[in-house]
Image (cartoon, rainbow, N blue to C red; front, side, top):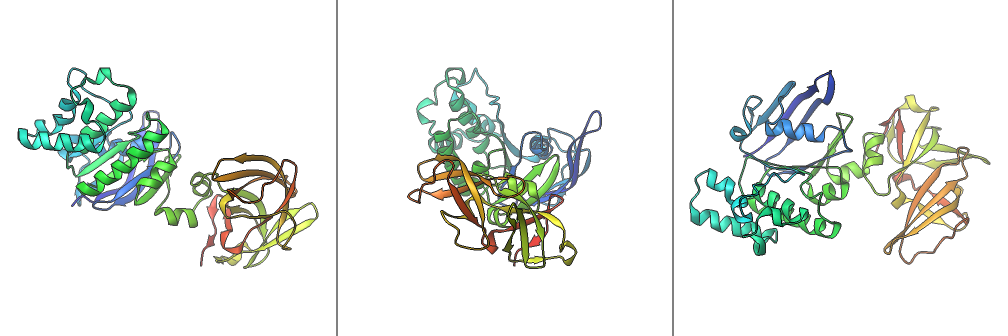
Length: 367
């Protein structure tokens, strides 16, 4: 069992700088949890407190119900891989990977088998006799990752462990990390600012911003029901579009245009107190319906400013005919009708794709 609990954890640095603020979450046994957020949001501070590398200012960290605040990294039985490699350059790749097992007195036979298994999994077999100084950065990072994953710790902590690899290799190594996690039955917490990494690897996402927890949940939960405007914007590529709007009643929201307002139905529950108030309407680029001519009364015209063709899809940037000249992105699949610069198109927002936000918080509960 390796369940991890953070209970109201704070990290306060010198000068009263808050690195992590009142963070509470659980990572279940054998779960793969990704901590996602922009730089400076508190991700690495959280990981270092879990590892025992940073003292906890307030709150508790528990492993299987036992408070570990005062335990060293070795006493916590955690495995670590960071963006920096921290390899032993006088040792070979084989010796670097084997080091954690030898330090625990494992037999030579067991050490050799596990080194060769992890080396094969991460495509390191051909360089086991090489010194790290002879390797490129991407290979050094794989060696560091192999050294962390070879053990069977209570918790595996990975902090941007593949950031120095090129995009094609990163996609391959992501799949191998997940496979190793499944085979070993580890509890893994993975820190990254790259949402593609987080989404492809994790069972759940924990999103941090400005030292605070924004949301924790599955990818589907965060995609379909973001709790804050930041989460809605940060998860998804391209990012969610935001438009100024007003709630007319419990089922309709309007967006002001130069010709008057366009009214859209939405699905879900909303508090009566928001009726008549100005809010923000959120719609994902992938879910907007676009047509060359007006087909529905509930639609807004837009002028195509940029058309980016990316093989399997095109991303259009349109200036809407609203009073603020809002720019909105729309994703259309390959093979769909092409739109040219300056062309007018009409955008429809089906009821189920609309998100509503007030003061940065989601106010629409999806039904």
